[in-house]
Image 1 (cartoon, rainbow, N blue to C red):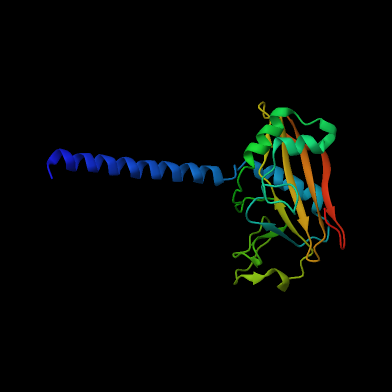
Image 2: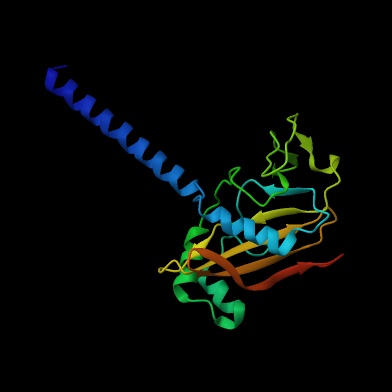
Length: 212
């Protein structure tokens, strides 16, 4: 084999490795939840779910890409429009960005700051180490969800925003061990540097023996 052929193979291999590396970086970037989204998650938890009796919050590690628990396909613009959430008042660019952000799941990190201990759950196992925003914790082995006196587990979508970054939308669902629960869309407006919850809509509820 001559030197030109060898050089060509080296260049080809380098190009292939470069493409694989770029694709991996792109996938990694897609999976990362932006740090600024956690302030919206925190506010959602504090405003909708926390009570004076809350001691531990369990959060699904991976975000959800659908709005109904009996569906597997990601949310679409058509499904949002058909259900007329918030009486159709959601800006079109907000809906587009929300749908685009939730084409695939993202992995949540230990960036929550709502002031109560929390742990991530994957499948039926609580992950370790336990994460806390304000309370010291002890590390230990992973434990089944049923091993702790938990009332609920929360799952979030990824956050969608308007082009002007002045409105945001997030979905959150609450599931209990008995199979009951509810899902909510939370609509944020930005005021200066702060976000506030502008409106909340119940997407679905499951009571005993019911489906959404």
